[in-house]
Amino acid sequence: MTIRIKNISFSYPDGSRALHNLSLTIETGECVAITGHNGSGKTTLVKHLNGLLKPDNGDVLVNDSNTKACKTGQLARQVALLFQNPDDQICKQTVRDEIAFGPKNLGFEKDKINLLVEVSLALFDLVQYKNHNPHDLGYSERKRTAMASIVAMDSPVLIFDEPTAGLDHLEIELLLKVFEKLQRENKTIIVISHDVDFIAENMDRTITLANGEKIFDGPVRNLFQDDSLLARCGLLAPQMVQLSKSCKLPSAALSPQEFISLVQD
Image (tube, rainbow, N blue to C red; front, side, top):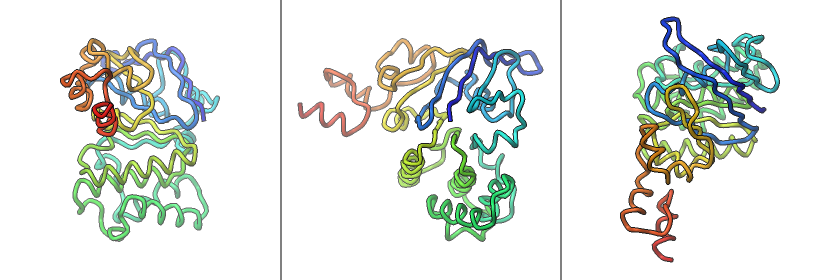
């Protein structure tokens, strides 16, 4: 499932420009982070991938289908999107029904829906809450319910907007196990995040936006070792990178394991 974005520009009805002449390609099975300061165009960009927004100029191709010619419902089979706030997504009265909502709307058979729901409940440690009203649960449980609902759609591309926000360390470890499973299934993962430590330790590639334009596209390590680029996009270096520099190590570590290895060398 290849995504090709070709020279797209987009402005909102009030005239504010959100994207300008932006091009990029995301290949099947990639694990990509989209970074940048607030208002840089990150969420606007990913809303173009499932047809919630259509470009003013340029084209977005999802598996060679131009989103301009596709309805959002059609694109949902290919691209599932987690909103930043779970309360903007949750609409059913039980956790189980919430997770089943997407697969039902995609027209899956009953047996497949049941399997997808049970797997997603287990993946996100929600089995004990399956009959609860998600609106009565805590923030992290609502967040996990929303994430489970998009994983249950079984789409080849999954977009997570700020997935680690509001999660504790154990819940982030749970999320990483889900990512590992999705990658084994050769699914594409796109993560919008300000969590630079999470990105540094777990993402392969970073696309960085500033004022609606792409200013970096490459390996995570290259972004976090470039102080001037980080300043331009309003990001701080990850803690391990900062610690590496303060210890005057020969290269910057992206994870605690890397840091220990560099110190021992």
